Length: 175
Image 1: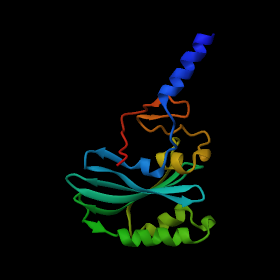
Image 2: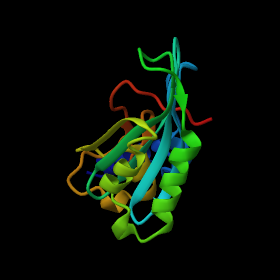
Image 3: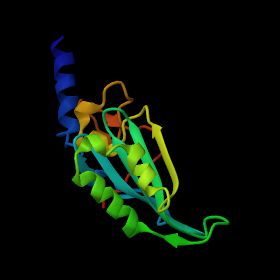
Image 4: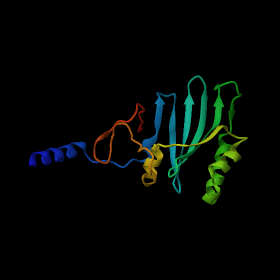
């Protein structure tokens, strides 16, 4: 039994200290220099957001907002060029103004449905959906709101027990 205890202690020491996940850890490059996510922000009251982008044989920029408790997600594009038959557009500043206005007021009125309605003639590909998996921004800013969602695991990082988290094939860039 003593031998097992020594081996367990050694394994924990080898794993090293576990660092808390931060929003800066959520920056993601999905294909080298072609697309990803950046600018993860804590919007307060259990919500996070980030910018989505793509720049290969066409480009787009958009935003994703997530309510960490429910998993409800609002995603939309604010700029596109050569992404299909639709003409190019860039209404990023107008969309950002809508988001800032909604988040400056009482959260009870800043529903994703209201934001989507205000973005209707500004943004494209507006969608609201529920996600059953915890996302990186929520794991970093609001881990206590995970509930029954599948826990987010950052590839190559140690979890709370020191074991390596190697879920999926997506890698996250920490630079």
